[in-house]
Length: 144
Image (tube, rainbow, N blue to C red):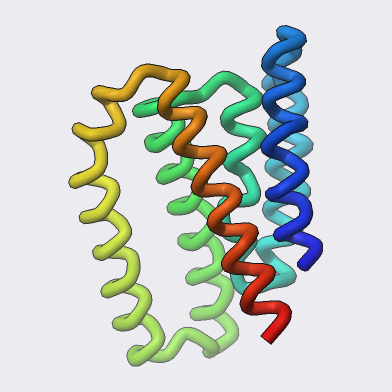
């Protein structure tokens, strides 16, 4: 529920920061990355928690998608190495992960042309909508 509340609050906060001309700086992104990395190590997945920060940094469209993809790759490669080292990454889990990862890669590849044709304003609205849908899904799941 806390993560859902964070997503909901970040939509108007990010818009307010953008309207005032404030942007997240690169050194601030390193702090955000450290916090998100720590949280990702504690829980299974933090979902799209880095989305508002990437948008506040100024990433949109292809730059956003590629940065998100590389960040996810780094996080999940690290987690896979640690889980493998401690014997928690079995072949059935690895094969399911490969299926999910391949599906996400295919979806990103298919959506690329659509996203690149959007203007930056449309892209930001789309990302805000996706953040709110993610928050609503988390709330529904938490309240069950």
